[in-house]
Length: 484
Image (tube, rainbow, N blue to C red; front, side, top):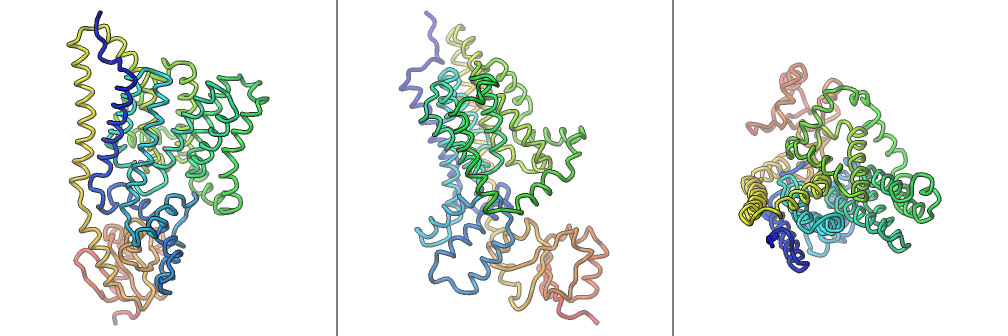
């Protein structure tokens, strides 16, 4: 009888999965203490400033100046989500006795690894052990996955909760007990509370799964379904109504309603696919969708809901989906799980071939995984942001404290606030025409490209105000008196 190299014992499967998970954690902790400029620094430093604010509220020896500054830094943030990861970091700072921003990488990486375990278990339930290991390897070692999953933002934690919710939904569909229903509701509620984007994935996943299990009419009569929905919605509803209030409506108007007509422009979808192509070959998306077509019924219902959720989320957040790569952070999970039926079909076919072809395929898969690890490590190793840190610390030291400062700097000035400990009003290009120098003592220009793009504004500053500090590629203008 032909030996099947893709059929493992339960013990071997678990050992391989744990090996994958440990390797996945290891690569994420590589270059651990480097500053978080590697992936969406604007979002990461926003989290860091919020964690600093919470941390300083716990300190009994914080000075009035420090408290005033962290209050200002906090006032510059617009957060719709509760500060879960930031609160965890603040408590950790308190325990270790200092701000160690890199600890966030450990937490985010652990969240991603936990999600990987439940992805593996879900894939095993709906496919073969070989397919489950394939999905786990894809989820862990895609280079984009490595970078995104160790970032200081709520998205890795949200991803963990979404995967746990998908697993809980699948097991609840298998055996619809109250215990499983409550667990599902709590997991989904935590996912949505961590970040509201999860509502698109979980809402559509539950809709398609419940219709598959009960049919449309019967689903309205099932008490457990209503209980699950209530548990999922209640936490975020309380947060939006009683904590955010009008801020939520303002954000929805800016982020989703305005320019909504863009979704009717074919260019929008090209930009969407171009953004995905930056970190994932678009052909894999289409192969994954084929995997949905050939998946077993229950998994198919779950996957259809998740993919529809991704699509609706992209249409609603039409600007972010084309510009912010972390809005695609669920794709390693979604594509990986969708590829399980495809992998199973390939493994089933190859198992009937002779040993040479089976071993050859196994070698190819191992090399693909090794390439992902090597690619991710090379990217992390090539990046050293100590010079960036030194720049922001230097700017913080050179900026005077005796007046109000306006700044033309990248990333909303979060790095200047974090490393330079400087209160500054960010001046964006759309504000150049209304800028009143009399309201400020100093103007910091680091983003010279933006400064140069408005010659009239630049000339009005250069011709009328002296340069206090000329750093070669940054300038501090003294606005307190004009050049005569």
